[in-house]
Length: 462
Image: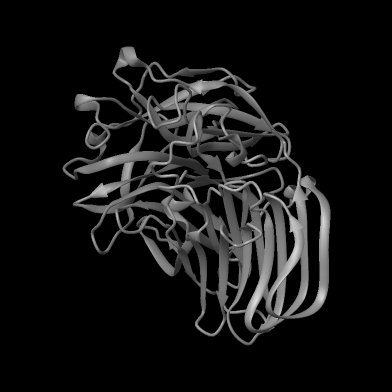
């Protein structure tokens, strides 16, 4: 159903899309690769799709970068990264899996491909695999995947995710030339011994190391981050830990980051479909979240959408210095919107209702509870369609700065991205059935002092 299809988020031209892969800024252009099944709207035969942009807002689809080499026993090209080697040659590192002995649990291999200068044509290295599980010696690592590569001084380093003795872990390797690798250590692991850690990333912000990973486990898929130090023994010493986005598999998973041409640490992340058994959508699945800028302020991770998104703003609605008791219609209508709300104080819980039908039959409600320190994205009435996932997305509320709460929301037909106080993120998918589910209401159980509200209709780019 095309009216549920996002209109300004990046999507594959057709078919299934999941993890973002290998984003890189090169010669004035951003390149994004992604896990892709061009043959259907379900996970299967995973390729690497490819797109290019000048601003990370308007994208040009390019030819598929990688396809499975079936003649070599490869059935899927799993996630990875893109780097430029010491001779200026683009290189993709990715996880290659197949069937039988090449299964993803025990038989994954790390492969590489070299690219043309414009990153459009790719050729898999004749010496593949670059690494096999044997590199760990007697240490049996399973679900071994998702290389993340960077250079530091005279050495190249690679992170990989996986599981060791039933516990999710991140592992690190070193190479002088991107071909000959040695295993160094387990950077970190799940102390409670559960699941698999996927899509790891490690980078510096100011003078701190930041470690990202996506835990693939049945009870909690929310992406984690740790701020601290990578010690000389290649173990991570954590000083602070948090949730990168509370959506998990309900809305935000498998992110990856890169440095852009402005020195910004930019993050892409996958917004999975949560439509369950609903059969009304055909031909497409998966959305990339709006790229986000990561920064540190007072040793706290801050997350904001890229400012370039403002290029899409059209009609604006705004008001300032208003006290609200009960519910108020903001007047803005639409399913592709940007909303910004600054609240000076609240005597109780307050809310922002979006995708609301005139009678309230459908609505998604963002609850902010300063007294109990909680944020809830309530999807219980988000859709009248049967079989749609409607679990709530919950988060702890970061303390307000000087008693002021900053709330930013991006809506795009079936996607919601929420940013509270520049650090608490909740992203998810909803599927309003009614065409008139377009209202935005603000309200409070007691008295809400609104400092400013701004809303924009956003331009459709597809």
